[in-house]
Length: 378
Image 1: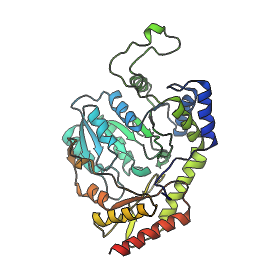
Image 2: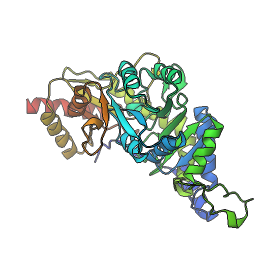
Image 3: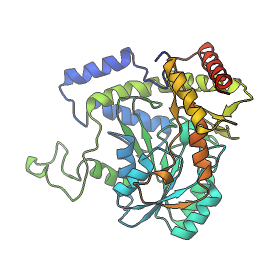
Image 4: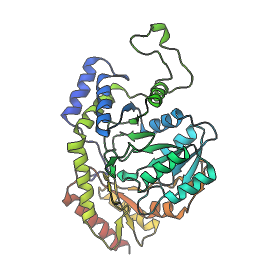
């Protein structure tokens, strides 16, 4: 592919820290560079506690288990989201309550959330910031969850650095999670981050992520180290990936984030009578444009897919929108809203190359190719 959808930016700093991990002869969890990454991530976000784990999905699962989600509990999730939203819920033996999103922001619809809460009395709600755009009603949702004593889990997997009302996403929830998979805002290969300001909750997260073994410090007797308090998971990030993560967070604000926003702004300059940018930039928000997608006004799904196939043939990597979670038949879920919204976005959206190496000329060429293919199939 000449124009990649998204790709990691790796350089001398990443190589240097990885080499330092190799020289330390410590590759597993708890490495020096991973600990430095966690501290710097916490400082960037302005939050007390950060733990690096092996994936965003692991972080979501940990969040649900840490807040005592039990079998049969209801958890609200958005219909337009990564499958991790629903799989982490069912992995916790909870029941997903899928709520429809707004068609212009792809964030959870606040009016539908109120209906879902009234009907299903959920214990937790996953607030997802799709493609790096803060959900419009994030602050309303936070306030309402507080009022109803519902745990707010903020899923910022795609939105590191985004802001709403001058607050960084990831600081709104009782717990927030991020993905640092290789194609995300920070890319380490596979990885995730889980954050909270609540010290007691963080202690529980740490235990669960380390197999629920409380005696793992250097000061504990060796014969205590393999005592477990109950169910736990092997989720902690290994040192090699933590070394890449340290370099990425040190480069993030001035380089990686800056370039990502620049690419998003290039796309937003362009105009077409055939399509629009799928998501609106909402007042008082600062999106980070993790991915830039276009919505075709008058094309059905087959023509959209044909355009996508042709773009791929010409070295322009694309992806579809998220498959609506309510349409994934192997998952049993309750539903609130109008399925037409997520289905329509899924069928009529293409996600275009959004990697930080693109310049304005590249983006104009990509969009010009899309316009040409529209004319060709009509």
